[in-house]
Length: 151
Image (cartoon, rainbow, N blue to C red; front, side, top):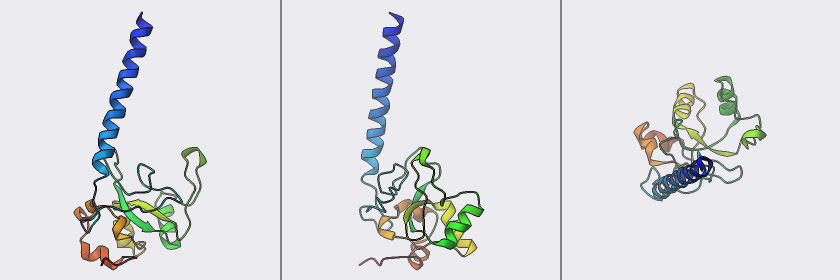
């Protein structure tokens, strides 16, 4: 009997967690970019984003705030590696392919700001950069790194 109750409790807890995740995802799907328009995909090859869905969505468990859609450059990748965040080396156990110059990736806003101060910030795709980036950096500064221009 105790095992049966335990199994039901675990099942109900899992259902509740799935429902919470669905609610967070549903809420995040309405996220806007820095222009106040719907957030477009950053990249699906390699699959990026905190939720690995191709978008720079964020949520309460995204402590790194992965909201900047950036095109990788060799100087940035080397800088990030030197800072202890190796984005170059593949980690198959974590389903991370490793990045090369030209790949798009949802970066942590703090790493992008740090790289900006060091003079190696990669260019960004503003249409795919989450509006929360404006809490850390002005649109004017972000536009100076823009890959695409907003019409």
